[in-house]
Image (cartoon, rainbow, N blue to C red; front, side, top):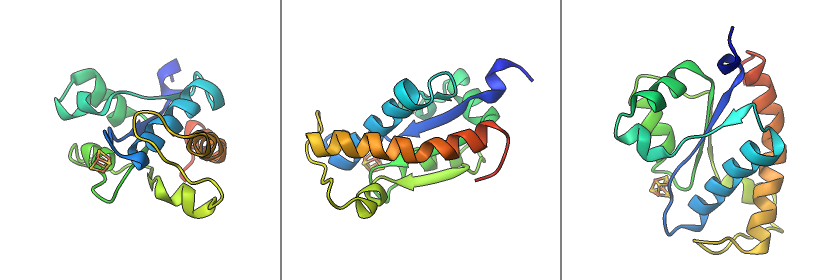
Length: 138
Ligand code: SF4
């Protein structure tokens, strides 16, 4: 297996103008940049929407966690339309339901509670990333 086989794709919805979408993007960023750099990776969702070959290959060949900002589940459905069931599909409000003391707000920039919630969510997802990177199921 090559280096790419260890990658886990964390795909956030674009969620423009929505706090929960901003939380999805920030959580993905935390996972890729701080919590599991070199293991978790991400791509811009629109690349899948335009059928970019490299983006397609990434989600077809690696475990995928989707983070969506609402029940429309754009990230999850963008993978499923390729005939691929994601390993873990999450809606970001779930993180708030588990941590009601951290109420996110803001769209372009999350408030301090939202940024902290993204850090907490990314920390909690680390074990899932590790399992998927090791070839286990969630
Ligand atoms: S899942 Fe909801 S918040 Fe995210 S891009 Fe789709 S419609 Fe927007």
